[in-house]
Length: 115
Image 1: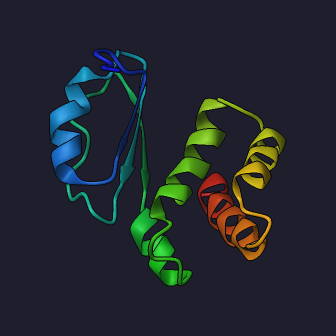
Image 2: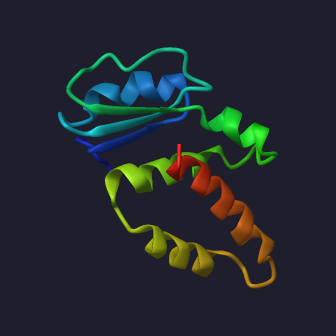
Image 3: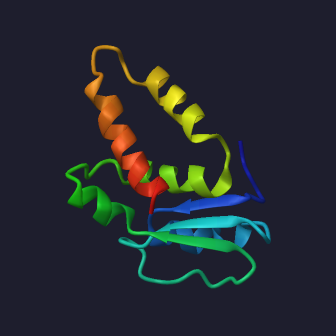
């Protein structure tokens, strides 16, 4: 599907921010990985959250989970679902054979949620 007027943008690289910033509706939210994007959002009619997600992921020895850190912040700031609902959904997504993945993912989601 093509979303022409998103209410939320997650920008984890500068080309994405450059391309999609202007498409977010007025009053929308933009989440920026400030570890990878060296500029500020140009607009003043959107709510912006700068999260050094990649740096946080590296510091926590989870370099491939920066997106989950951003997800944690998105959940907190949008109330798209409750924290408990997120945990229940995460439990359903993690294979029973790899329960350690639940703990790792929850840890990094918490980093973003509490940032």
